[in-house]
Figure (cartoon, rainbow, N blue to C red):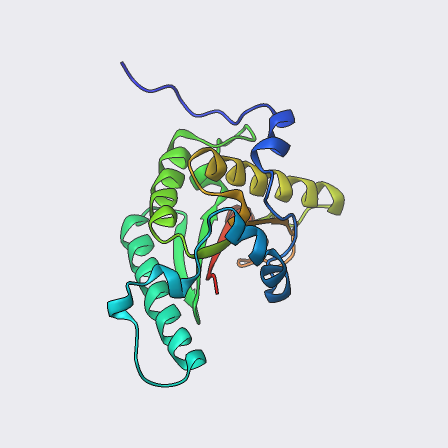
Length: 211
C-alpha cells in the first residue's frame, strides 16, 4: 500500500506549527536577537557542533571560528549538492552561506498552491541534511514572477515560503532556526519571458552558520 500524498495542514494551523519562527529577513542583527531563543530551544552553535578533536589550536578565536564555519558549511554544500541533482533545483555557495534554489514547479503542484509529491520527497531530503547539520539558521524566502498586482505577488510569495516552512516544522526542524519572508517579484534571476517566469517563481533556502 502506497503512502498518502502530502497535503499542507489547514492554514489555521500554520501559526501554531510555525510558532518560534521569525517572519522577517534574516539579517545579522536579526540572528543575534534570535540567538537566545534559538539556544533555549536546544539549538547549537558551530563551535559546539564540531568535534573538539577537529577544532583548530592556532590563531585567534575569530579566525578559528571562521575556518570552522567554512569547513562545516562546505560539508553542508556538498551533501545538498550531491542529494539534489534534480531539474529546477540548484545549490550555490556565497562565503559561508549555502543557497538552495527551488523553482516552484519543482516542489509544488502545477495548478494548486500546495507541495507536490515530488516536492515532498525533495524537502524530506533537505530536512534530513538540515537535521544532521543543525548548527545553522535557515531563511525561507518566496519569490514570484512579475505581476501587475504587487500585493498579490507578495501574498503569493509569502504563501509559498510559509508552506515550505510548515513542511520543515512538521519534519523535525525546530522553528527557532527559521526566518520566513516573501519578496514578491523582487530579485528576478531570469528574464520575464515565458521560460524565465517559471524560474522566477521560486523558494530560496539560505543556510548560514549559527554562531
